[in-house]
Image (cartoon, rainbow, N blue to C red; front, side, top):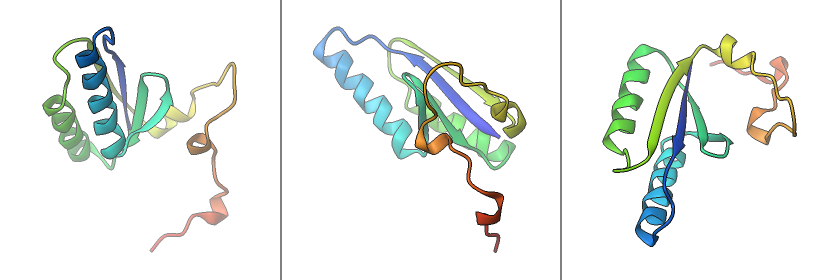
Length: 102
């Protein structure tokens, strides 16, 4: 599964910019990858992991703006079609032969 976080935060004042940077750093430090501007996603290992990361997200919400979260399966996420632009490095699929399980 993947958790996708969408956000739109105000960035007019210096304090609002600081809050934006802190929230973005939280997402990056918590394992999220930027899919596109203000859209971040991370892999989950099941429902328990989803609840854990949702609680972390709620605990680090900024005081103003709009933040949304959505969880999708890997099959649904793989169905995303890139219409304009190039895929990011983190989106490029590796060869199945490169997968190593322990």
